[in-house]
Image 1 (cartoon, protein in one colour):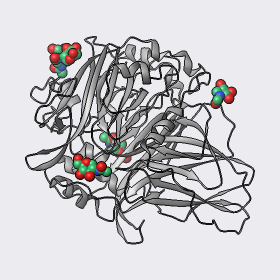
Image 2 (cartoon, helix red, strand yellow; image 1 turned 180 degrees about the horizontal axis):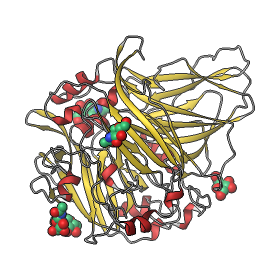
Image 3 (cartoon, rainbow, N blue to C red; image 1 turned 135 degrees about the vertical axis):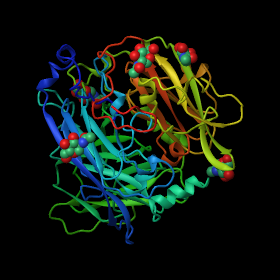
Image 4 (cartoon, helix red, strand yellow; image 1 turned 90 degrees about the vertical axis):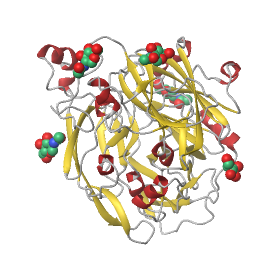
Amino acid sequence: MNHPIFLPFYLGFLAWLCLFSVKAEDPYKFFTMEVTYGQINPLGVPQRGILINGRFPGPTIDCVTNDNVIVNVINKLDEPFLITCYTFVFLFFFVSWDQDSNGIKQRKTSWQDGVLGTNCPIPPNSNWTYQMQMKDQIGSFSYFPSTLMHRAAGGYGGINIYARAVIFVPYLKPVEQFTLLVSDWWKSDHKVLQQTLDSGKPLPMADALLINGHPSLKSFTVLGGQLYMFRVSNVALTTSINFRIQGHTMTLVETEGSHTLQETYESLDLHVGQSASFLVRMSASPKDYFIVASTRFTKPILTATSILHYDGSNTKASLPLPTAPTYHIHWSMKQARTIRWNLTANAARPNPQGSYHYGTIPVTRTIVLANSEENINGKLRYAVNQVSYVNPETPLKIADFYNISGVFKLNSTKDTPHSIPATLGTSVLGFTLHDYVEIIFQNNENTTQSWHLDGSDFWPVGFGSGQWDTTKRRRFYNLNDATTRHTVQVYPKSWSAILVSLDNKGMWNLRSAIWPRQYLGQQLYIKVWNDEQSYRTEYGIPDNALRCGQAPLK
Ligand SMILES: *[C@@H]1O[C@H](CO)[C@@H](O)[C@H](O)[C@H]1NC(C)=O
Ligand SMILES: *[C@@H]1O[C@H](CO)[C@@H](O)[C@H](O)[C@H]1NC(C)=O
Ligand SMILES: *[C@@H]1O[C@H](CO)[C@@H](O)[C@H](O)[C@H]1NC(C)=O
Ligand SMILES: *[C@@H]1O[C@H](CO)[C@@H](O)[C@H](O)[C@H]1NC(C)=O
Ligand SMILES: *[C@@H]1O[C@H](CO)[C@@H](O)[C@H](O)[C@H]1NC(C)=O
């Protein structure tokens, strides 16, 4: 999880006072998530799914800014042992980040990030409790399994973080909110898909696209004339989507915790891992309409539909479906540039978002990360600057905490692409706390990429085609009103640039959100550090931390 505040029962009373005297007031919300296999049939044929509390998709977590959220995850999956203890894992991470509209960066801890570089996996028939605080956040997010190919079987759900009652929300209040999770889906079992990747072959094209677990026919009932909110997340493993509603326009109000300029769209591209909240006024004539999600930049195009049902109407939705934008990368790139911060609007805190002048801060380091498809030892792998990441048995975070040598070497990956043969490795880039970093994602491949950073939000300041060079800063960067996000797309044969303020000490995963790519090595970790030993900047290992690899027992 990105930035939960662990409740440190083990801290001294003084530290407790410093850190938590204010937060002790914030409400606690308790959730249990029982993770089981169960039969589902999204495509009309029974197959094995991963259910959360018996449901696919999993339940939506509804909470309010600053809530302390305690989630007890019970792993009842019973997987056969394949290679390592990682086979048995089931962890979650929350695709979320903190809104720091007032420039005060929030502290978070990577101890609860729920990825294999920071946490030991939860063994079958046991449980582990995440403890975190939704500190200074609002918006639509999602959760999903971060281990193996579990995501391909479900296990995902929505997270909605509502503003506190005292905080002004910069848009009209909808009468109701709908959470829509769009995913790609395979008829094959997730273990078969995993074996395909393990054997060095690419994942086949998905068989279908789903909205909330259904390719069609799911219905949302609305009252004519009223205003509704659609919280849409692309929880797919592989594909960008386009989202649209027949006969209606959509007003974008929020993306991944930023309040946007309220632009109206006929349709919007959402890339793997991204979320957006739209307001839609039900001002069309009362009948049924199609809600459509379709894949972008794929052949063939997969389409999922749901029904927008005006209460009391008996008229079925009529074909044709509203058309998707054509293939054009250029169109999508242009649209991406229209998603901008509303500088005067606040987010989770009362301060306007624009009071943080991210474009004026001097960059302390520029790194260029190029993704590539590689053949290593006869198998398909994906690499970043020619290193294809492999998970060590001992999570990086634990190795670092206990000074266990030989698990990783800092800076073994280069800051810029080099033409050297690709190798397997455990890449960790070292940064100093408060570094202000420019990261260029250079995509020389012909597929769309999606990059996610845990632990810090960032500003996607530029998108462009071809090779990035320093002249692009002047020509293409938005240093004024880019939104903050946690996931950025990179178009085929193009680059995307982000600025990120590394104010969050810890070990953070920077990965391809495209799941087979991260599974086969398109990821790395960044260690954000300084030598100050203080619970002010980083907590010690949580009392309930699971142990694995070379981690000493308590
Ligand atoms: C497992 O669940 C039980 C109660 O259901 C709880 O008391 C215990 O703390 C949990 N274990 C962990 C490691 O979170
Ligand atoms: C920006 O936010 C303000 C509220 O602070 C709101 O009144 C205004 O309409 C918003 N502007 C746009 C273009 O969304
Ligand atoms: C790890 O090494 C650092 C620096 O030498 C030291 O301050 C710290 O106490 C060590 N941690 C453990 C758990 O031994
Ligand atoms: C890693 O690289 C950063 C930036 O160049 C540097 O500050 C840091 O000291 C390096 N760490 C090691 C262990 O080489
Ligand atoms: C993308 O590149 C691969 C090889 O790198 C090639 O086989 C494939 O045809 C290309 N696809 C498109 C759509 O250009």
